[in-house]
Structures are given as structure tokens and as C-alpha cells.
Image 1 (tube, rainbow, N blue to C red):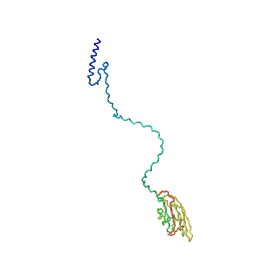
Image 2: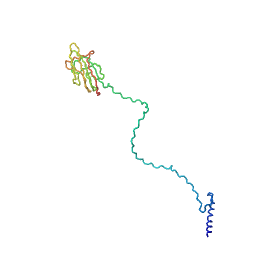
Image 3: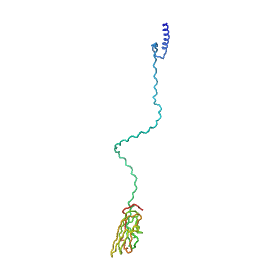
Image 4: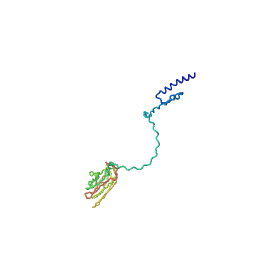
Length: 238
């Protein structure tokens, strides 16, 4: 019975060995090697390399973060060397012309051309030595202040035939008097000077004071004179 079972098993396996030899795709080898334990399998093929993912889409941009805290101020660096001198610039525009000192000048010097005897009215000095600003009006015999400031007034009068008493007036108020007594067969001089602070429109003049004091003489050779000049202007002009 045992012999029959062995023969039966052999008959089943032999065709398997023969059929393996008839497979043309397999490499040549002993087809019945290790037939009791079965033939070993063949190694499989290596798979294709996978994609590296470099061509993938970029993700969405994240939100802007909060600004960080301000850092401490650094130390002041050392001063660097001076750079080379730059090119010379173009000349700037010309400045405005400043005020001329002549804009604040006021002066006059007038002479008496004829004898004066009329009292209590301004004496008209009509001979012009200097009156560029025309602040002395020879038609009325008065100086009118056009620039506020400090003025010096002087007068020199020839006395002849009568005594002289002369008054210097400011706005109808006598500021000073000068008296000179005439000496027979002699020519004398009466003079005076005064500093006055004037405002614009103040008036200054000379006039004979009293009926019996009109001995002021003047002609083209022997003049009496009246002068005034601004010493310190207050720059209020008109």
C-alpha cells in the first residue's frame, strides 16, 4: 500500500517539472532542482523614481505680523573725515537797497536880505544858503517839522539903528529871548542857539518882540541868518 502511494505522488510531480522546462520566458536552470521544497521565486523589478514636488503650487501668503518693539538707540558714531569741497554755487539774487540816511535828513540855513522892523510876526528869511528838503517856508517865515527828532536852531542877527529883542517860538509859545542894545555909530550882533525835541507838524520861527526892538539889519553883504538841523531822528516822517 505504501509503494502505491509513493508512485502516485511521483506521477503528479513529474509533469510539473516538465511543464516548467517548456516555459520559454524563464532562464535556464535545473527545472527539478529542489523539487521537494518548491522552486524559489524571482526578484521583482525596481519601481520608477517618485516626483520631487518642486513644481507644486505656492501656498497662500500669511498675514503681516505685528511690528516688533523699537530697539535701543545705538551709540553716536565717530565723525568721519570732511568730504571734498563742492563746486561753487551760483550768485544769489541782489538784495534790496537799504534806506538812505538822506531820507531822514532835515536842515536849513536862510539869510535876511532886507531890514526888518515889523514886530510880533514871523521874520521871513528869503536868502537861501541851504534848504534842500524845503522844510523852511520862506513865504511864511516858519520851519515845519517833517521828521520827529532832536533839532538844533541857531541865529545871528546884525543890530543897527535900534535895540533888538528877538524871540524864538515853537507853536506860538516863546522858547527863548535875546536882547541887544544898539550903540551909536556902531554895528552889533545878537545871537542865540537852542536844542528842541520836535514832533511832526511842530513849527519854529523868529519874531521881533515889541514895538521898539526892530533894529535887525540885513542886505546882500551883511546878512542876518537863521539855521536849523536835525541831530537825532525819531524816524516818524511825513
